[in-house]
Length: 230
View 1 (cartoon, helix red, strand yellow):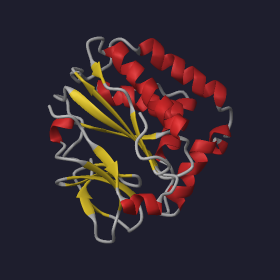
View 2: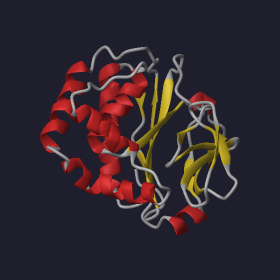
View 3: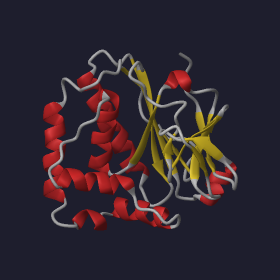
């Protein structure tokens, strides 16, 4: 499997001067319906969330507010905060995909928007870019989504693989048979590079615990502040 390369376009740097995109690549971690080794860590994340965010305190979290501002421009609400609130109300962290469960656990803990992709489905260089009027792609649901101009997107040689507002695509989605994953941390503005790196490091830890034989690359952070930080 070839290495995954990614870069920010000039258009992205201009549109999102505080923009950050983090990349974590993990291999030799065959997906399965449920996690088997990280239940204790998931319960700890749930307890930590309920301690950190009593009442509606999560809405005032700086990371949550940064994303809320971006989603508000498109008439939407930040879905990760909504998902975290279900955990706060007593729902456990779970998913019918072990890779997605690990991603979701790290995501609700940090509130950093994350997408998961099968590296086998990616084609060529990943370009962190800005959507143009008329851009479209097939969402995770299998339905086509047309985009408004100005959102943060990532493209490979075959098209858009995800956007902030509408999420990951169908073509590169994590599948039951996936044996590797590329996780992307999406931050249009207002989230520190250090927070994205800490988030991906936490996700890497969960992957290592669940798949002790996994090959986990160091997180890579692409930022409008600096060209590439590792």
